[in-house]
Structures are given as C-alpha cells and as structure tokens.
Length: 89
Ligand code: HEC
Image 1 (cartoon, rainbow, N blue to C red):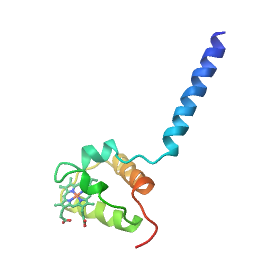
Image 2 (image 1 turned 60 degrees about the vertical axis):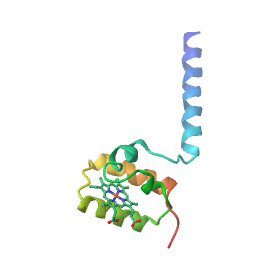
Image 3 (image 1 turned 45 degrees about the horizontal axis):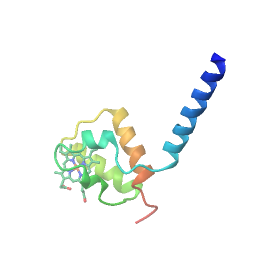
Image 4 (image 1 turned 90 degrees about the vertical axis):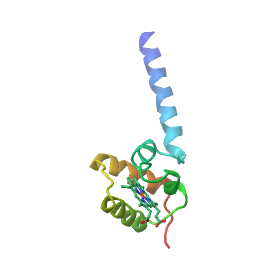
C-alpha cells in the first residue's frame, strides 16, 4: 500500500523531470543572477551564438570584472549550449 504510493510518486517526479529536460528553457536563474549586474540579462538572451563565441564572451566578461564560481560558470555554459547555441557562424 505504502510502497505503491512511493512508487507512483517516484514515477510522477520522473515524468516531470523528463518533461522539463525535453524542452529548452528560455531563461536561466544563474544567468539572471550573475549576468545582470552590469547590463540587463536580456543581452544574453538576445541571440544564438556558436560555442566558441560564448567561450570568448565568458572570457571577456571575466576580464571586465565578472565574478563567477566554477560550478555556476559550468551551469551558464550548459544552459547556453542547450538553448542559445547555433551550429556555426
Ligand atoms: C562586470 C560587468 C559584467 C558582468 C558581470 C557581465 N557582463 Fe556582459 N558585458 C559587460 C560589458 C561592459 C558589455 C558591453 C560592451 C562590450 O561588449 O564590451 C557586455 C556585453 C555582453 C554581451 C554582448 C556582447 C556582444 O559582443 O554582442 C553579452 C552576450 C554578454 N555581455 C554576456 C554576459 C554573460 C553571459 C554574463 C554572465 C555570465 C555577463 N555578460 C556578465 C560587462 C559585464
């Protein structure tokens, strides 16, 4: 009885998880927090760029004074490559 309930809760969370990872979200909390101090975060969402362009931009932002923890930088790059990256220039 109790066990069945647990199993269905687990199945439901799995489905929600799959639904969420299947689509590509348009915004990211990390970007909204870390990238909106000098300019609006919308600058980031303006257009798709190549992987190389994003790497250059992250480098340039750090040179301008962006402070970001490696774990958050990883999340930013992961989000950008999922939702804001095009194949080539
Ligand atoms: C310390 C200040 C600062 C922070 C923090 C910052 N930026 Fe910027 N960013 C700038 C400045 C200044 C410019 C505009 C001029 C330029 O490109 O030199 C800019 C411009 C940009 C542009 C437009 C560049 C172009 O060539 O079109 C993008 C994209 C961008 N930032 C992304 C980010 C992302 C992603 C983050 C967070 C990870 C971030 N920025 C955080 C200072 C910052």
